[in-house]
Image (cartoon, rainbow over all chains, first blue to last red; front, side, top):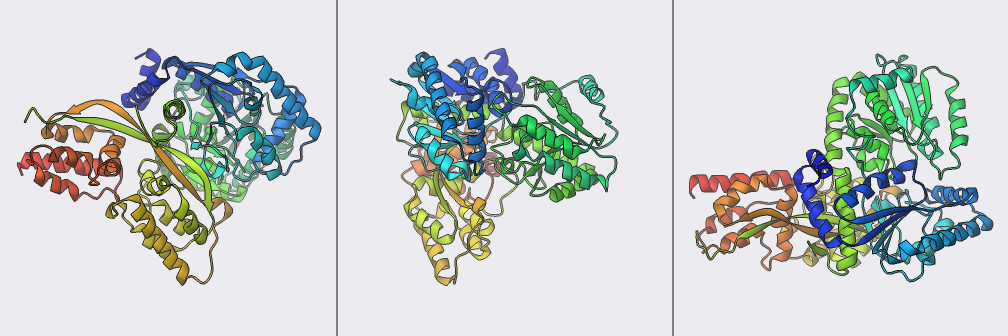
Length: 413
Length: 221
């Protein structure tokens, strides 16, 4: 076993690594490619930064390609994202034509690697048409939808469906997100990497220096939301919850930490709305972080007493997983993947309004023992269910199934 | 120990969930979809809960009962569905028919249909099982007694629950193997047959089996 796998075994147990190695055997000499639309920022890039090296570590020839597009392309795909989450956005014919043209160009650029691959994972709608535009494909193609598509705007889904229906399989994080598609729809929640900069244990002096850098008073209660500046993450609702809490607990501080993603053109606009809502309150810390400031986020999550993820829609919510892994209870929006992770009175609370969030914040800050007890449970819950080793195991199973076994519901390795 | 006995190879497993895209928002839709759904859905919604992430003992042991309670708030139906024990039925089709019967009875006595909130619909899910080798092989029953408390819970699932689908007699792997040992362990098999795996967690099941094996061999029954 390599040193890296030994490090994972220390966190997950050796049996888990043994399963991975067994599952990887039939996949030796197979070429696997992941394709998405950004190397930096957002959950998908983060997952791929962890998953791809681990797949290589267990002996699978894996690579990661990123499609290229102009501003109009990302404007269009951001609208897709919003529409899949239920926004009734109409997208102009010109933007759709540019989306298709961009995918055709990328298919041409990547045809050498995509056509010959044994398995191609296409992440989210941005590169979805690559399947149609890649000629002479030899392998199996899987569409991975990371978005909460439980109630998509039908007009946009109808347009996108024609590009994904032909895939051999798709992956959704929750059954609620699955659609009527003519292929198997696997349910695989994403994961975090316990050895990554975002999640690895930190020394106290590193945590303190982050607190000092941002003028955070660790003697007073600190609430944190880490997320892109995106309306579906409801940063304004978090500020409302903070203000409601502040009237009862004047000492409380709020950190809203986030950055942009290369494929998200709306971030700046939402950031301005957040700054306006904060009204220069010195206890609201709005931190715009670079996409590679993983250790800073790690430290902030360890500094915070309570972590919020008050999303209105959420594909999964990796920031929730990260926070639970640090032993912090989470107050999350009662939606999507947050429901899988935030179990009322066990790992935190699901809420529907800023008022609900404020109530639970007050409850936890007045019950420190309960907060610690929930934190311990939260960490074990993630260890059992949401680490990258489980995620990889399910990907490997899917690959073995697609390559070797198309009919039986029983796969013996 | 007779050298003719075939060793028991200990395996491990995992369930991979597959959404069918089929949903129910009221009881009639649940009934109609139950009639036509893949048999794997019935299996998954009864047994998958043992392997899925969960915290405490669930209020209801199958997903149909849980949805009746929390999706359409029909506590009476939830109680009736909740008590259905899948080990009482010879196969999945028998179990499916029982569920349909219960739901139709409830539809007959209901004056109107209750609808679930749109984001609390019942999602029909089926599963595939992936099976792994482990490093363990057991050559005599005493060794199994020693090993059982160290097996993973998913290994227990494979040998004690999934085995019932594989065995023509609906037996678990431990009994099937012990019976092959010249009838010497019939009493132990009878004790194992009394273990009901449905209303306990896999961890509790492992503990029960471990205690049963240990007391059998320590007491020399």
